[in-house]
Amino acid sequence: MTKKTKMEKLAKAASIHWGVPLSRMRSKDRDRRLVWPRSVCMYLACRAGMSRQEIGDWWNRDPSTVTHGKQSVDNSIELYPAEASQVDDFIASLDGFLDVAD
Image (cartoon, rainbow, N blue to C red; front, side, top):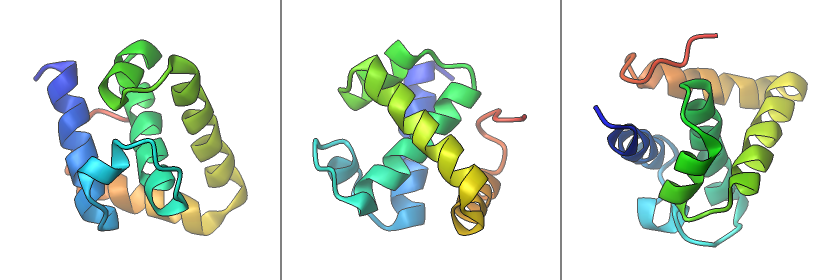
């Protein structure tokens, strides 16, 4: 599976999991309901070994935005158990198609 295909499948899964349209997730909209799933996708793609450039290219974002999204998720996981649980639940829903092991 190509990295582009992995990113697309990850984003589609997030769209379904969080109940937001993929087209809106890929938009420039900064609504929290869109930013969180988008950031989680960026976080997981980084953990799976994709480069920030590859991730940013797919989302039409600068690599620095990917870095910020990953850091935001890292911080939220550390500080907020409910958000950590959301990420864990999403990872479990992926059924192993994307290697995001610690």
